[in-house]
Length: 332
Length: 82
Image (cartoon, rainbow over all chains, first blue to last red):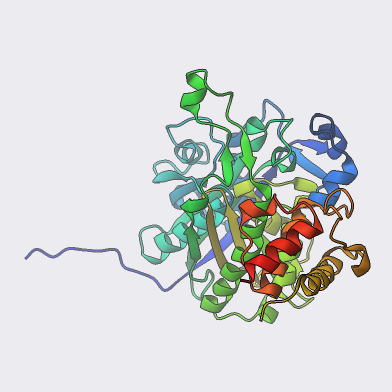
């Protein structure tokens, strides 16, 4: 029998660097309160959001993804040509095909790296890190560019009181590569399609084409999602710590998907983390940016000096699908 | 052993107080959660989950919208205890 070579595995992977890009427009609560018959106070009290960053019409999802990626590549100290896979988690790439990732690979100089998109909504970045970790440790790719990016403002209904007023635009990027020591814990991830309709679109593109429905925009069943996001995701967060072998007091930060500050507050309360653990609240100024929110929030904590390279952070994404993913990572 | 409606009301008032700071004796059967007690949808869900734990009952998401008054919740929980 002929000899068959398989990729040689390596033991560990880590996140080398992060990059961030946000929308260029600061949108206040007063700016959006009118069509939902609301107020700055009502929005702050229910969401914690003071402003959300949105991209102007001529600033595309790809523009933000390229900016974030270039920062991450530069900080990682690698050449774009060394990237051996590009993963783009997004739900707002406005083409069914080709993928956003293949264009991103071209634009950042990573052509001909394999490139593909992940559709896991607010869990997308953690799904991407899970994939990148596996690709690196399996020996399939040396360096992987993972991007979570969204231009959610293209898919909002200004009169929707369920989710639209939470949403912002941005992109976060990470370079994942080989490591001498553990840098990314085993992912705890999954989905629950029985709640497929809890977060999603108002209709399909086919309905829109056939004149049955309007342009699809985002919508959610807020109470159901809140219950799932807190009480089910607390179980996932605890499981992620357990499989990582990390105690809560060893964490420097909890970086959840920035869905709603009330969810973050309740999750932190349920986890009973020590006061030493920094809880990311980038949502207050950036809004909910779906797949981008975790890398943006971690990037902000680093920029503010509230966490440092080498710290341990629990990151957990959750959203439409319903889909969820969590890891403990060493902060780059 | 199943609790009486009065005991459920008393326990529910404690949960509402924990979540919102509303005085226990303000939580009365005829009070609307939203209109009288000014409890928003997120706090309502927190109260529901805590009530499930405290009274060992299940309150499905679809049922929450029917719990308009404190009395509605007390009745539901009292019956759900079996």
